[in-house]
Length: 197
Image (cartoon, rainbow, N blue to C red; front, side, top):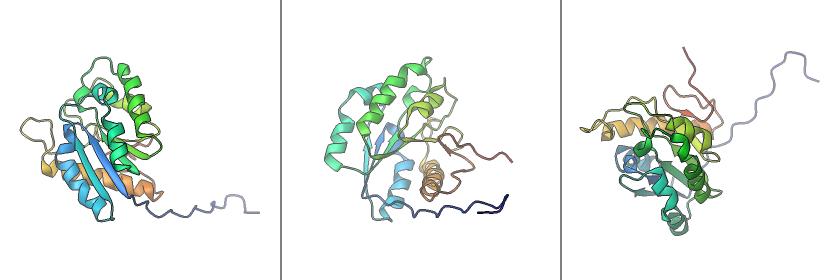
């Protein structure tokens, strides 16, 4: 028997999971620097990366359309990245989105999934918290605290801002896959917060 107070043996760290096909879909936030910076990271691992942008798409529109089922049938991805919510952040009743979030997640099916939350530019009315609480079984990545360089509209990240966003996500995504602490200075996985200094 182990001595009292002896540290428990650490579980072996699983190797990072590599994917065959990744579909990254969502609103116009997919169309900028984020996707451009993520694509080569996945391609370097031998992954086919599919980018699908629906300009001005809302969570409701995505839930009610057949876009996701068509993407799943056409590409049969083993990882889905959803970047949705930017067009809904100022909705005064974010709880109304719960059933639509549930519908979207169900359309992804049993595939691995990350819901990349919107990078807020003027706060929100509670939507980020609602997505965080209802995105499961997709893993929620919180982008709301990221400081990103923005384009002239003050909303969409520039390519440089997209690189910073992609790097922050990738750091958490890959460390999460490796069973690490899943803590990052900015951006967190569901239920895990940055360590306060």
